[in-house]
Length: 231
Image 1 (tube, rainbow, N blue to C red):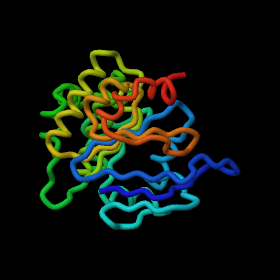
Image 2: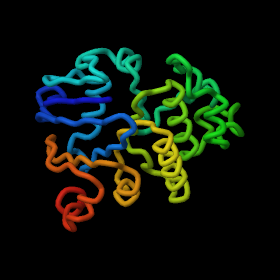
Image 3: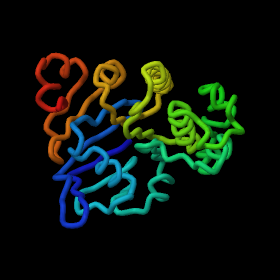
Image 4: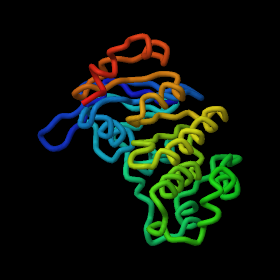
């Protein structure tokens, strides 16, 4: 589904990523873990064409995307739930959902299905984006990405800043998406929830992948979180 090989990227004279390689297979859930400032969001920005990679390859189902503009990446089938949600504050819920909607053959995601998945959005469908709570905004950001009918859904800080009850709701939604066969790449700090959800995990340290493995392998190394994830 997604293949990233030897990705290098940065900002100005500062290089952030040094040869990052990762893969996400069909129907697989993969996490990208690491402390703040280790390069997770930079990896996502490079994949989506928001910054131009300095080296390496990015492919979706064999289609080369490195250096392509963001709209080409979206057309290739990647859907992003960005850090900070970045919904349109001056559009209502329904307008946010349809603004970037895309059909890929027989579309799996429609307004009706998103509203069934997130009933709260249907209740608030005429509210403006800036009138929603943080949890509702995150549901809207996920719904908006799903409306592009993505082959791969990417979430940058899936539950950051949300109340525990809302976080639990988001994790339950992602579990349902996994059961439906949706490929997902997710960044979040809630390792315990990610261990239950994901098939594989990658840890970034100073712009390099320093560990990768399954959930079983992760929990089998007791000090892994202390070495690479705790402040």
